Image (cartoon, rainbow, N blue to C red; front, side):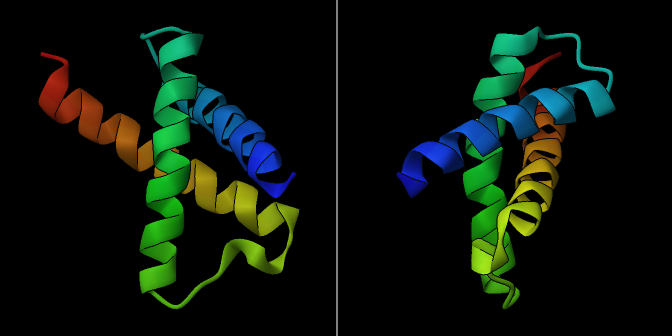
Length: 80
């Protein structure tokens, strides 16, 4: 059940990150990038010693930060 909730949070984080960054790719791509960003954000924050298991709000924040990073990287290297 936690896995499904994490997917929903990461998808929402991708959509929100796309809105924050004035996304021009559409909601579906932002959600997919958010799913990847949620995993990236969790990985990066775990390397820094932070855990997202503290609750819903920290997990959302970490997912949004990861999604913003992945969208930025996508814009930088893939989209020309």
